[in-house]
Length: 454
Image (cartoon, rainbow, N blue to C red; front, side, top):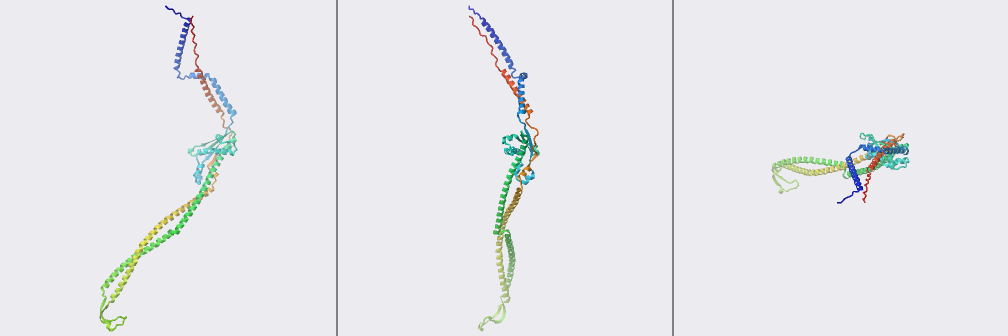
């Protein structure tokens, strides 16, 4: 039978181990209970955290406000503002008299376009150069602001220029200088445009004069070569009159020929009805132009009828007249189509000639009218002053005044902003510190060392 002796130290160690296991089980239960409230917001805990860090919050906030106050009152220089208000509207009568969309676009643009030009580095550097201010465009842009004033939808075309500077006199002077520099800049643009337009109009006027001279020469040459529409009209009238005479003569000759033919028929019928000879008593008849001997004497009992002879002569004369009428009628018949063809050709030439002359006259009239317009426009531009045009469009409604009080820095506002930022930063620091403390690991418990029994 075996006996085991229990070591008192082992017994004591066993009791300590049981105690440690019991404490661990209690801590585990507590941790499980706390994990149930991990996702819930404990406002009271947050307030307690802030209350414990109240001195940190108060100290940081006071330091921020004190620093902002010292900087605002001791280090920052006062800033003065001087403002001027401009009207940027080109009068309608000036726009109509100029008749140039480019100039109207330069000085009659929207307020936003003028604002961009007013803040252009070229304008700002010109204004600073006129005042002998050694500043570049970037520092000047920080000092100058421009904005539209009024209701643009209702037609308000006002621009306000504000200049900030530590010296009130410099702010006022710079505001005035910007306005003058802007006017000078626009005057240069308008003057350049007017000069360019004068050159363009003068060149076009010379071109129109050359075109007019060329058209006149063409018209003269055409009249000299073809005689012009007046001469063609005279020829057409003459040939028309001749054609009318030929037609009248043809009608008359036709009537006369018809009458002569009828008369000839009657005479021929009468001639056929009359005997050529008539019976006579016994007689001898000798030729009156010869001397006949008694042996050659012929004795007849009839002689030629004088009525027949007279009628025969009348028939011969009628035939000759009829032949002449027919010849004249044939000549008239041949002349009529020739005259008609000539008249048609002359009329066609007249139409072509009239069209060419009408076109040349239209070109001449158009060129002359354009020359008159160009001369009037050139005369109008000669009396234009670019500076006066710009001043009529860019007017000062409210001139820049000398500021009596500084507009900045806003000391109280700076202190208030510093206080708000100090509170935010200090609260953040307090919560960071609380988180840091709460997440530190707990020290591990010491376990007793079991001794050996000798």
